[in-house]
Length: 214
Length: 138
Image 1 (tube, rainbow over the protein chains, first blue to last red):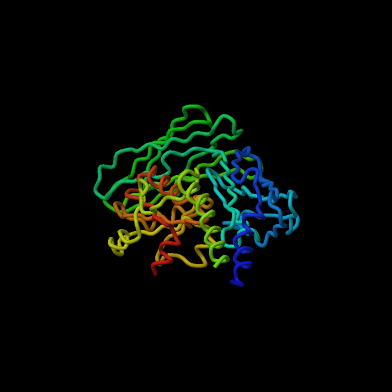
Image 2: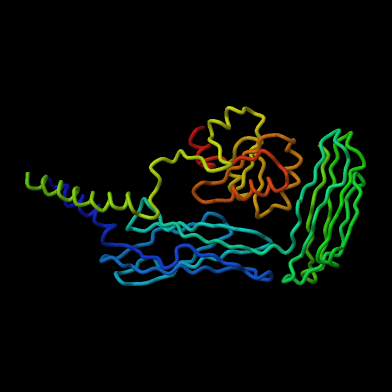
């Protein structure tokens, strides 16, 4: 029966020491020129015993979590800051931050960081493909730059002559229709369409689409 | 005997909130994890397809470099423009593509699979349980 107090302490720790998180899941929509998103996860120790944060780690190297201190007394609040570097990423990004505390050593709290980075250009589809022996009919790639992005498409060129391009500007620099026609489909071919923009100034973005005969 | 009775009472009292949480908690885990989402496939099924499958690793380059499914190709959203051409070089039309991510830390496999489908790469499946499922069955 001597083990009962220990059993009680083991079972009671999660009951008496708990961190309550204000926003464990946060979503951000950064502006096109933003380089970083910082999420702040605030918590309060709503238990009756101090809680020690023993480990904070992230799902990807792109997020760093900063912790002010490790031990928080009853009623004390704190914050974990996670910085997400946008660095050329686009679309939906989802990261997780795992927080291990003395209140739940085997069951880390998972904080989520979702970032929807607006695409500076839309290329649909990014791949046009013909099967070997298929009729070499033209296929269309649509390129669009959202109005809120101050960019224009300045050129669309190919890296070899396995396909022909027929460009039509629907809205100059903002919306283009590119008809791609292979020279033939009797042998495999691979062409890259290089789509250059004028934004950002000094280091304009280049995007790519692909044509394949397979 | 008193101590045993007390312990039993503690367990009994603990069972009440446990039962309520399992029945009514909005984020309670499913009793069965065996339900496939649309586009998902189990590891056993994928393995039955043999070596013709093209494995796509949607995790970070760092995780891929540490370990990955043999012959998998790295293709994540963060480096899509750099990695997509290498995927195209490996992929053959009508080849089954199976995308995996870390089921614990990453939910990118669905997005990578969607993006491939939007580019007429078919059929594309997401591995149920992700990298952890593959790792645990090795």
